[in-house]
Length: 461
Image 1 (cartoon, helix red, strand yellow):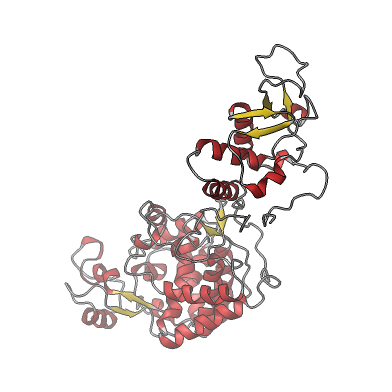
Image 2 (tube, rainbow, N blue to C red):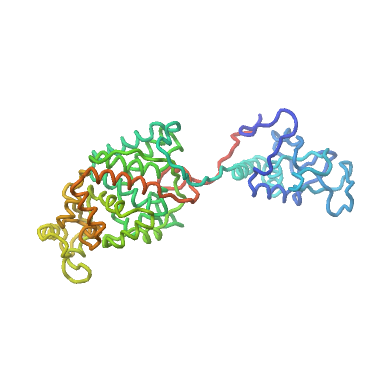
């Protein structure tokens, strides 16, 4: 029975596009043709060990592109197929592989590999040798990993997976119904993903024995959460459109949906990202700001990504929803800037409330609302900053940290929610287009890179 996955020509030699072959495969063919074990029997070039019976029919087909040339030790260019001495076969790149005696018949490249396999593993049966041939074939014909997309656009999956955005929104809605805080947690994933080597889904990767990922980075450990919500969205999308929608895109869609479902603005997301093959705790630690960061440091950080002061203040407004840990604010309450005293830029009544929530020496994982309305996306966050009721130091410093540029934007957003919404959408789109040029893929499971082990392209002989 003919093998599946390999379409043999009905007549004439198969044409090989040598320039399209994997360089490793081409090297293996050239080397084996030069030194591999073989012997001549009349006009047929036959391997030292017999091939599996179903392949013998393919064995005598002529191959265009490779030709026999005399052995370097023959001392003549007139050797013909009537001579019984072994000859060597080479690939001549300058002549496109043509040259020598055109009457000789050779095995196609993949069967050269089978000959090599059979020769080296002479103690194995033909069945086992054929199995290894399939493994090698799949390896050399594996698909290339493409570069991450650079041209993002609205409606990217309109033809390949038109239900993708609907499925993600349904998953986010269900998660927020179970736990309202999960909306803010999901939105936060985009920030922590995009700022570290671009929006590539690297923040979702679990650690491996050879890679320490971003989940244990200082700004993420015991803080970043709701990874299971992305898993649920991915599962739903994979069931409908397997291998099409990237985890990086799901994070961006989910962040938009979390804002909209919390009462915030809607916007069209530009899609077409690919998922990274690696993650880096070190990169995250170097980039992500500390809760202690001041406005000056934040302005410098955002400028590295071509994000303006308005972008900084608007995107900080993501803290309109969600909660923060006591661990992130105890220094403000008891030892601001090493003074042994609380932060003076804090309303006394608000500080008293936080003292009760986060006592010195208490549980650092206890959480409190980042603003007075932690489940509603609105401009209350900015009103709180003006009233010196910011939860995080990095938030309050936007108003009271001495930077006039950020203070003015905070005041404007505290008065005009529409202006905040418009600037937030613009900032999210700009941040979502931070991209890497590293090689990427479409992960099947957002927590791990795809298994790169080859699979056989033949199902049977």
